Image (cartoon, rainbow, N blue to C red):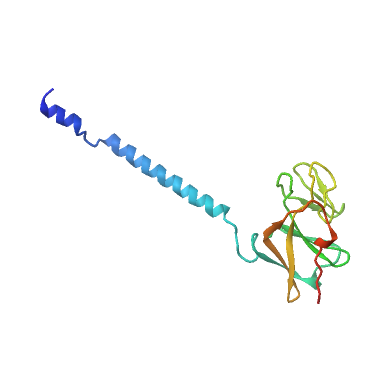
Length: 169
């Protein structure tokens, strides 16, 4: 081996294969970065008014009838107004597997389609395998309107009358 051959073997030329490896590595890194940023944007809570994760205006107090259940799909909750006029906002998410519960007006029950558990109008569990009540969101009032704060979930084991909120005119 001559000195010239030794020099070429030590200072390897940048080949087309090396260029392709470098390019594919850079593109792969960029794709992973974009997927990570996209995932964070997707998982980030929407803190806008009227969207899940924020303050939701459910309507005027006098427009919501007693003994009613109103579904708010954008807010991901049911607004329950009892016979006595009190309010509760029940999270639509089943505490067992996280499925969206459905309201059956004819049976006056919430049902989980994933495992057939049922809950009464106050969100208290009736049948297994769910061992606890539906979670709540805070209800408040402003200028005669019902406001539901979906940014914070209140976990509970059972229904209690002190979970009902009343409007004082």
